[in-house]
Amino acid sequence: MQGKLIDFATADDTTFDMNQGRKVFRPEELLTTDGAEADEDDPSTLKVQNLPQSQRAYAEQLVPFYGEMVPCMMYAPKWKLREQGVQDFIQGMDQAMAQAVQETANQQQPEVTTPEQKCNQALLLNMNEVLKDKVQQIVKKTVGMVEAYQSVLEKHKHVNPKQDTSNFEKFLMNFLEKLADSKSAPGVHRVYLGFCAIQQLDCVYLLQFLFKP
Image 1 (cartoon, helix red, strand yellow):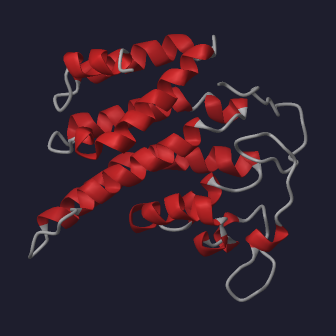
Image 2 (image 1 turned 90 degrees about the vertical axis):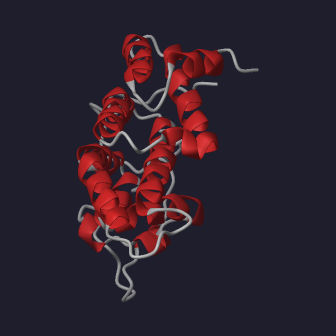
């Protein structure tokens, strides 16, 4: 069920929970490793290890491809930092995957899960978390975020999102839930159909997913 969207365009930058819109205060989560309080407006002082455990599990998967600052911003209590973090996440997708593909090519011995598969999983998991955010300024970025992911798949055709079927289908489900928002619905419809053009996918699979019980 879609939660009520929150628009802070004219509000002050009070701390809100990213999924529920409830006011929360987590000073203990904004500590640097040396024990000094971090500056909430300076994301370079935030550390992934100090995020709540549920968020840290997702953020840590991005660190090998983005460093610490972007995932810390994506999960910051302040929505303005999250908005900037999501924007940097979107803009860095292609570079992150290109790095992962190169690391895979440079491997001396193949791993069970290649760097590009790890990168794809990290993108899917963190896109899922972004899709749960109820702040309108971030919701507005979700269609562009999914378009950026489509561009990654189009460029790196050997990266198959269906290799991580569970997370990919959770991502599709969360994205399709945006159809309930009249402002997002046209873009969601257009972008979902755009997956039909992805070589690694096919229209039959996408249609079957729509009617999956």
